[in-house]
Length: 94
Image (spheres, rainbow, N blue to C red):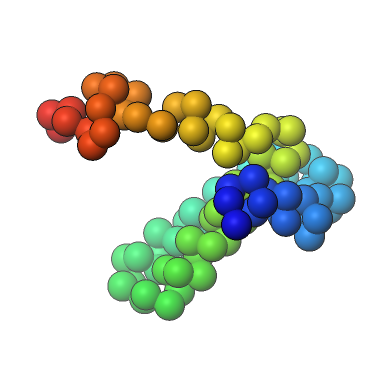
């Protein structure tokens, strides 16, 4: 399964609800899930961290669907190589 398949799955599962909720509502859910991920990481709760990472990804795909953005396409257009140094692996100095 690739990124496009995952995004399509999220559309099948939740597309109608996400579109009805709209951009702002879907974005707010994404931000809330990022907060929950932060809390799980701070608590060093590995199980909860994995669950919250999945939730963050799910809501990001949902937001992309509401905005009609192909995440796979935009991701690989930017990150097929390091966008700053243009190398694989990145050799940028931090």
